Length: 204
Image 1 (cartoon, one colour):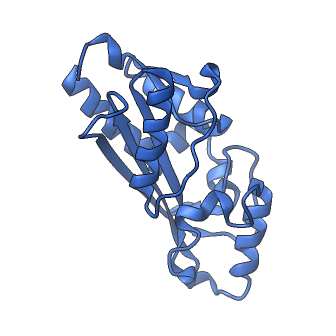
Image 2 (cartoon, rainbow, N blue to C red; image 1 turned 90 degrees about the vertical axis):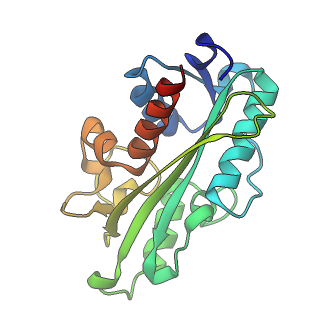
Image 3 (tube, rainbow, N blue to C red; image 1 turned 135 degrees about the vertical axis):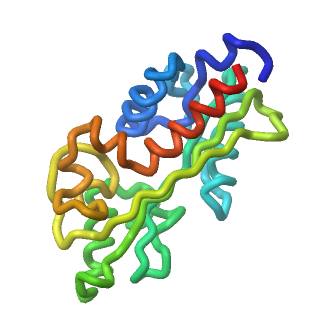
């Protein structure tokens, strides 16, 4: 990595407010300032790759190229066993290209309407990448997974995405009912970010 300071301030390739809050909060504990790409008037990159890691690299490269900064990006989604891993990389677009969180949740619950409790297992998966510069040939990659099951109805007002219908393993509440600190400790994104932050620190 080029300089000590270059990785103390990193652009985040996301305009999702919930994701920005989570990542800023998690990395602040490691002394890393995260600047959302919206602050630089950088729009979202089109996610055209077939895997989480390729989409994350695509988004980070776009943000780094536009800003001239080191960039991090994540690609994440929910994998439902009864749907053969869907929505997966299409989680944000499960109900259509411009679908809202509520519309995606409704589509998921409809798809699982006749699925019995034991078969409603699922997991959140998150892959986060760091590019030191836009042409970085060896991105730092970290991954986390969070096992659980899909509830039959939405519960809770915290979080975002599929949190209101995801019940973590060993819990009865949904991810949207967890306190933010508890969610960050358990979640797929929290796991991936802690691993990424340790790898960044070891390189500083």
